[in-house]
Image (cartoon, rainbow, N blue to C red; front, side):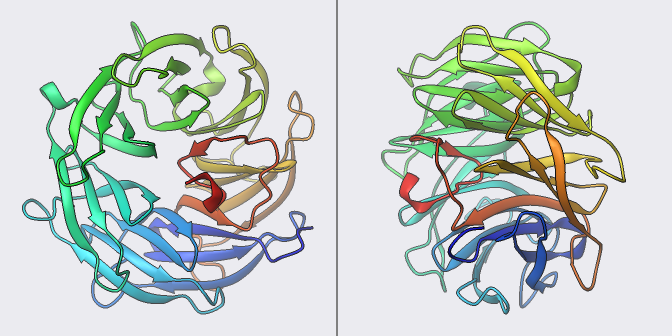
Length: 358
């Protein structure tokens, strides 16, 4: 058990909620607090993704066309802090999906705008538009779903381009296309990504692809693995020698050995709809110590998986339930604070585990 309380922050899509779960004891997760509500005043209509850091959780609300900032300094009573909304000009926030926070900016993958939109969050009570780049074609942002920012570059999973797209964000007011790359014949629908040690690990519909991004303006495909247990890959986190993939269609957490990026290999998997594993529509995850935490959209669950033996992961515990008291109806986005991060190295994932990685 961690010395300090450890919390998982869940964007519960069908509860229009940000829900906080105490995971200090992985064997017995418990509800801590929640804030709900579509439209004014909380702007959490179809909350899909969340990025928690410091005293705030940054939530994308799909049907409110909003980035909403929640004060989580008291996890038992999260409160609304600020929000910015608006489809099209000037804010370019129609159906925002992925969110990544770095410094005073929030970077959003905005699905219906085909855009990377950058929001100034230096005043959390009053976030403001900073810059945006939109468009399919030369900018390769059609159907963007996820975003990770490392250094001067934003890395995006562009689902309808079937590509990893890299954007230069050295000037947040004027982001510019740097490069795009696909993963070869048949590689479609990239939805999740992780950036670690000069590589981008991207979950495609039927495979995990690894790209060499040591030169962000000239990325190259390093290796890939196609496996039915990766079907519907929605999220990926890399820790040490392993990539952990939330496979939505396979209803699985699948573990890939990436010790040789040129030749990734299947290591292990756990799957199952309903009891006992509750992985129906596995969609987001983070990894901490000996456990992987997975949200399952159709099981209304946060499942905790023991990954101490990667070849044979096992269920540790589950917390689930739509509406009161757990507010986990359609859990989608997932983030964490105070999580042990041994073995992660310098990596950043869609769910940042610790502010030290920024």
